[in-house]
Structures are given as C-alpha cells and as structure tokens.
Image (cartoon, rainbow, N blue to C red; front, side, top):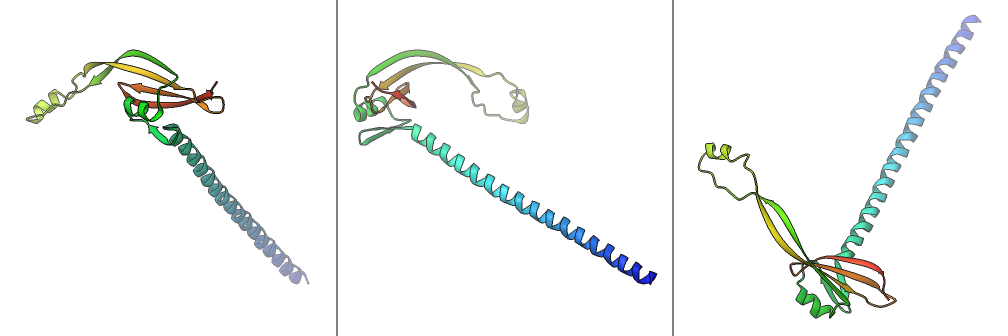
Length: 162
C-alpha cells in the first residue's frame, strides 16, 4: 500500500510539474503575442505620425493664389504674376560668411598630404531678403513669403487676416 501511495505521489508530482510547465509556456506565449501586437501598434502609430507630418510639411512649401500655385524656388516675377501685389513688403540686407574649400587637384601623394589640413577660404555674400505679406481677408490666413536674392525660399502661414 505504501508503494502504491508513493506511485500516486510521484504521478501527482509529475502532473504538477507538467501543469506548471504548461502554465509557464502559456504565459510566455501570451507575453510574446502581446509584445508582437504592441510592436505592430507602434509601427502603425509611427507610420501615421510620419504621414501626417509629411503632409503638413508638403502643404507649407506651396501657396495657392486663386487657381495658381507658387512654391519654394520660384522667382519674384512669377509670384508677382501669379498672386498679384502683396499687402506689405519688408526689405533688408544680410551679410553672410561661408567657409569655402576651393577644389585642388593633386599631382602626387605628397601634395595631397600637404594640403590635407589647409584652412578654408572665407567668402562673404550680401543677401537681399524680402518678406512679402499677403492678407487674404477675414476668412483666410495671412501668408508670409520670404525671398533671398529674388528666389522664394520660405512660405509661412500666420493668423487670420483682417
């Protein structure tokens, strides 16, 4: 009888171990499924966020004047022809300094090593900046167009017009 109880006890212990392993495996599987679902959700949220921001940036780089569209890179004359006279124009000049490494062509490796750590040439450039303001009325937003040396470089949207 004692042997019979010990066999039952052994079977109970084995059953408990199998049950414990199954519950651990089940728990690990559930955690893996949760982490995969979270990863998928994170990818979807990131994709939507990037898509929304890209759309906002693309919309900010162009300005619709009636049925015409002007965008960064256009000349002042084209913007004036498409949109007409702005409400207000601000003009100022800036002096910008750039580091410029002039191209140098080497005859041999010795010359290349000698000019490896050369200092740049400083180039000064006078930039004419114009900010055109288009007030499109009470029901539309004010547009600020910034030109550098006659080229449209920035379009910003302001508050409601007046």
